Length: 336
Image (cartoon, rainbow, N blue to C red):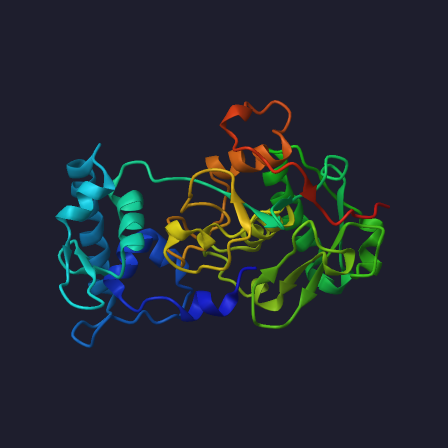
């Protein structure tokens, strides 16, 4: 689920920490138009000039740090960093950037000090088994798009098709729109695997489901707020749907992994690759390294291919995949 309000209300308890953790471009992209960025104290006004100076300073410092620490370990880096010598003391990097704990310090090191940040993807598990589509189901994932979208129906159909193609291009899965079911596109329609419907809740931009859920719960709901995004901004409906369709394939939020250092959800998941701060499944505001375009990374592609097999013609080394559980659970979808 991509939540709308946390993205807008979040994000910056400390301007310096946010720049260090997210990166300048990601901070700009993550803050929607009209949102007021607040500084850590009252001593510095959050003017555009001050923000640009902070972004530039962090970027220049990061370049020098990468060169200095190329080929060295996090443990060596940690020893060089000053830590405030009192209870709750923070790590101080780049002169005045405060990092709360060791996990976030390591995330900073991996994402902004090393040249190549770690990558990864995780799958949802139920009682130790992967929650994924079975071999007979994975290429028959049908859906309808409700005509209740009204004048937006064609646009939603188009964006769904674009988002499904992103996953179909790399993994042996097939999503199929069934237009004949659009007029009766409800949670009770058993002629499709899932339904895509509009809502006006204001609590999220969109939400989806995992493959193990029963048909009434297999919905992709798109909130009214998803249609009010800045058309010139990075966050668009197609990116939101790429993320949500990752959930429909069984993928979890990448930021629930301990390497994120924040936004923990639970431990009901299995790693498919190493941690990926740039994953399409990682919220940028949860110490993510990417931005709100929400596109698949190389490790997203590799991880989903580990689950379902690679799409035809896509080079893939299955030996790079971790061992899978002996069985998987799914919702046994009905087909038209």
